Image 1 (cartoon, rainbow over the protein chains, first blue to last red):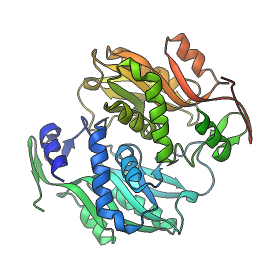
Image 2: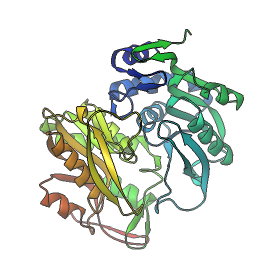
Image 3: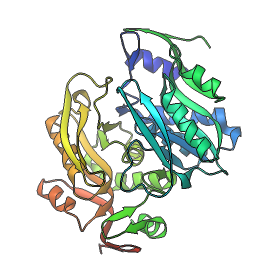
Length: 191
Length: 191
């Protein structure tokens, strides 16, 4: 998606060979117009899949996923990283490793929101090692729902996430695939 | 806001005298149509305040705040509860106590997103003890920005949040004010 790639080149900041900061428009301060355009793009790609729900993980996936859900006119469900007192009843759970935050945590979704009648589209801001995506896919599976695919804003194609997702049979659609980062030199994969 | 009150009565679940679960439409599974309507309602109330940014806190405030930001056509900024490797540079920070989760945590916003030229509207899903709201207001103050007010979806009027916010000089606009919860018996405050 050209508009996202151009925005990454304009406002993104590469640090070393692994980190891409997009905090000015995607995951800390959020450009809402851009989110709407991402939502529409994911809708165009997955519109024939009879999506009944969009699933993401708190927190930085929520804004994008909200506009995807708007485009499909379906509810959004987000997996929680902490089980609060307000989360009760049967819970679907999977473990996720965060490399940027240096920890492993459980993600949780109330079972009532993921059912065998659902066609779930997973949305997230980044695909890097794939741990969050595989965790969300595990939750979809536990709920007995059908996973129609995963829409990712930015894929770090030099990390193993896509391979792991494809090996798990997940149809991944990424809007900007980063081939390499060398500080300010950010290269996209050829489509 | 009548539509939100009716939805709380229909789909909310009171537990004991303090907890109101709204996880089917507000803070776990999210009704996007409703979020748009809340966004529009907050816009109508604050539209003369020259809002330049909407500020919320991860995670359950993000979806509402995204549609408020859309109505105002301004960026959304969300405060983070964990400082990740991707958050660097000068950071504004405040401490927040979560009663539902039973912990105290720091919330963080990159200083570059809250400036003296900003008119900030804070948005959150709940106002109960007011700790999150006061923490966000503290961050606005640290950044030297102008706080135009706070838009809250559901206020637990039997808890001290509103009083604490008003004592701090914050203009609070809540869409549904709960006077009392007794399990399934949920009463709203008269307007």
